[in-house]
Amino acid sequence: GDIAFSGKTEEYAKAKEFIDKIALFCNVNVERIFIIPGNHDVDRSKIEKKFINWYYKFTKEEELNDVLTTSQAMEVIKGGTNAYFEFLKHYMSGKNSIGDLGQFVATVPFGQNGLSLKIIGLNSSLFCGYDGDDQKKLALGLSQVNDCSENIDSNKDIVISCVHHPFECFHSCEAPTLSLLERISDIILSGHV
Image (tube, rainbow, N blue to C red):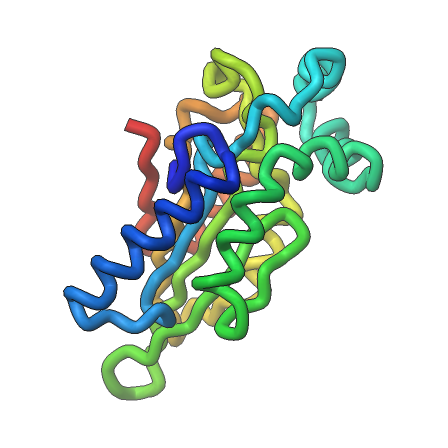
C-alpha cells in the first residue's frame, strides 16, 4: 500500500516506472508483484467533506455492510481510488480476479504434495479520506474477507494475507471480520508505518 502519496494519476506513472525498473533489475516478472491500496492511494480531493461524517456513521457490522452494499455509497467510497485501480491493471490484470472492493486471492505453486501459497490482498483504504481516519475508524467489511476465504483450502494452502493498516486502526465492529482473517491466515502482513 501507499504506492502514491496522494492518489494522483501522475504519481502512479512515476511509481510504475520505479517498480518496473526494480523488477527488471531483480529479474522478477510482473506476475510476482502483488499490490494492495493504502491510505495514500486515496485522492482526498475527490472526497467531498459532506461525505466524511456519513462514512463513519456505522457502529455495528450490519450498518457497515449496508454501506458497502449500497451502489451510491460505493461510488463515493471508491471514487477516491480510481487512479489506483487504473494503475493496478498494469500488474494484477489477467492473473487474479479482483473483487468489488479490491480484494484478491493469488495462487503461487509451492513445494510438492499439492501445496499452494495463497496470497490474499485486502483493501483497508475504503474509509480513508481525512486526517485521523486511521484512529479506529477503518473497515474491511466481512464480505471482503468472506469472498477470499471461499478460495482457501486449509488442508492444502499456506495463506499470507496482506492488509495495509494494522488491526488497531479498525473500528471495533470489525472484530468478527478480523477474527475470520486471523483464522484463515497463516501470516498477516501489514504496513502503515
